[in-house]
Length: 282
Image (cartoon, rainbow, N blue to C red; front, side):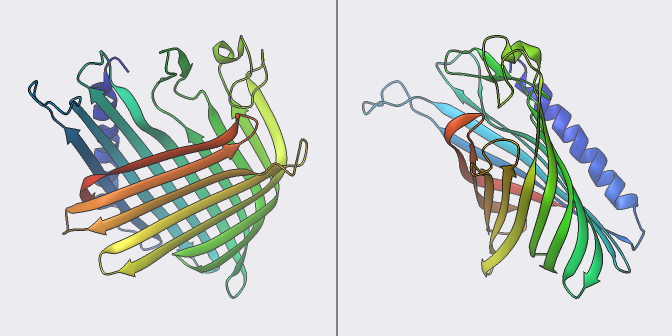
């Protein structure tokens, strides 16, 4: 993270390209919608502040982009999530990450009856920047780790705000560079290896609630059980995003993510971000 502005600039360039492509697409088979969010927090103390405190700044930039296809009995829903955040404490030499996600979800379905569909899903997750532990040792980087899931199943889709997909035969692949497994396992990949294959069942749920005018909660849940090893130990990935709109361009946002994967670490991983956001929809 020696040049964090370089990464932020790269993300902005990606967002610009996506926005331009959306404006040019006039086909009625596709529905496209995206939102860019910038969250900012700061705390400033002068040298005379007797109660103590350290000046710090933090910012989070995110993209949530949907591009969905529908023709007759066939649907194809896609969601791209890009998020990157940094915090800089005055006394620290370098900034630290507060968020770093690159995720693609794709779900194809063909209507079986009413709200039921035969489905095939694909999920890809990785990060864009290097990650460090408390001792500033590099423990991750772009595409290391990278997670893939793929499998056929059954989709229940009440509407665009409420879906549930069950895939009883799901393949999962985890990739990690050999550098991170030289001294021990990393993200579930065994020492000396660079990949881990799993085969099991996946359940993915999406629910968006409108609590009141200008207040919405978006929930995403993924459960995965590996048939090949300890199927009772279910991997959990839950994401919640609360948006409280002030006006068209400003909002207060709360993002919460909880992950449990006993192959990576036998404890719950929790990330929470709160701040005043500047939003741009396209």
